Each structure stands twice: as structure tokens, then as C-alpha cells.
Image (cartoon, rainbow, N blue to C red; front, side, top):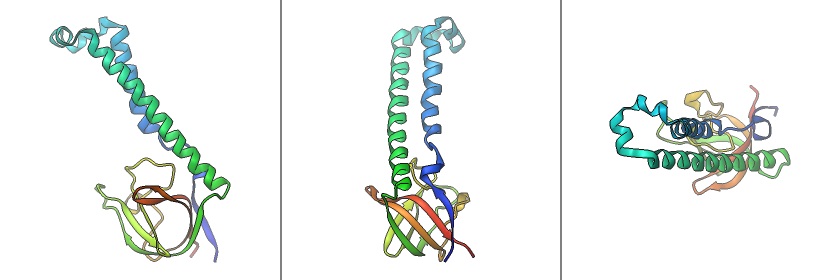
Length: 170
């Protein structure tokens, strides 16, 4: 059977930019308000009198902490999964997708399925270094599809992480 490579963490790139980007924006805004106090006037005098300088320091330091933590955690996950895929340090399962439960378009659930009694669950809204593109958002996995998956066992408490996904050509 011939397979088409759909996802490979080794070539997918860093997936946590959006998460880290939020921290960078908050850091930039809070740093600007902290180090350029004249700009605070656009936020109203009551707010400035009530909060004072400590408020801006608190938000600025929290934003730096958020950005660094988010960056380190997501970068570490991405590199670990990419390395596992690139050097074949993952378990491979091949077979038909069974028990497929797609994530609804509205989100708020994980897409789940089984291949040869190995369970998988993921969501577009959970940042991981692995495959997380649900069917409702254009993903490649469907019930009954023949797949070959290179995965990391027990990546988190609830599921295995897909490092490489191949779908059978029709």
C-alpha cells in the first residue's frame, strides 16, 4: 500500500508562534506604558491615579514571564517531537481509523479515534508539537481511512501525540 505524507513534525516548523505572540504584544504595550508615562494619558486620568506605576510594572513583569515560559515550553515540545520524527524514535502503527469522533466545528472537544487499539485525541485549540488539525478544520483523518502514524506514547495524560502522519493513497 502506498502512503502520502500529510504531516511530519520534523519539517512542520514551530507551532507556538500565536501563543508566544500574545505575550510579546502584552510585553510591548505594557513596556511602552511603563517607560513612556506620557502615553498613559490616553487611558484616562482616573486609571492613572488609581493604579500608579506599580500596576504597569506588574503587567510588564507578568508579560515577560508569560512570554518566556510559553516560548520555552512550546519550543521544547516542538523540538522533542520533531527530533522523534526525524530520527524515528517513535512507535509506528498502521491500519484503519476506527471509533472516529470528529471535533465539532465550534470546537470545545477533542477529535478522537483508534488505530489498531491505539487511542489518539487532539484539537486545533491545544498547542502541541504534533499533528492537531481536526477534520472540521480541514484535517486529513476520517473514519475508515487507512493510515500509518508515527507517535509518541503517552505524551500527555490523555493521549498519544502524532509526530508523523501518512494517509493511504486512493
